[in-house]
Image (cartoon, rainbow, N blue to C red; front, side, top):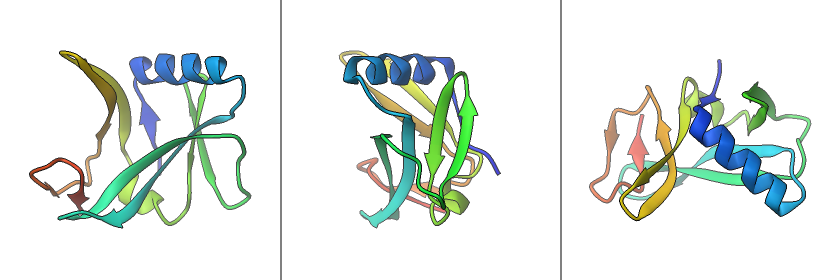
Amino acid sequence: MSVGLTEAAARHITRYIARRGKGVGVRLGVKTTGCSGLAYKIEFADEVNPEDMVFEQLGVKIIVDPKSLPYIDGTQLDFVREGLNEGFKFNNPNERDRCGCGESFRI
C-alpha cells in the first residue's frame, strides 16, 4: 500500500510548511459526503498519531489514517494550475465514478 505525490505537490507543500513555521507533513483522507459518497480531505499535519500510516516521498511526509487508506491506496497527489485556479488534484486509480460537480467520488 502506498500514497505518493508529484514534484509540484512536494514543492507546494514544502513552501507552505516553511511559511507556516510548523508542521510535519500533509494528512490525506476521505470523508462520507456528496452525490457519489466520498470526498477527499487534505490538511497540514502538526503531528503523527500512533495509528497513522506515514509515507515519505521527495522529502514530504504523507500521513493517512488506516480507515482512509483502502480508498486512496495508489493515489498520487498533484498540485496543478489551470488558468487562474490552482489546487491539489488526486489521481486515484481506485476511482470508478465522480459526481458532476467534482466534489465527490465512488470506489
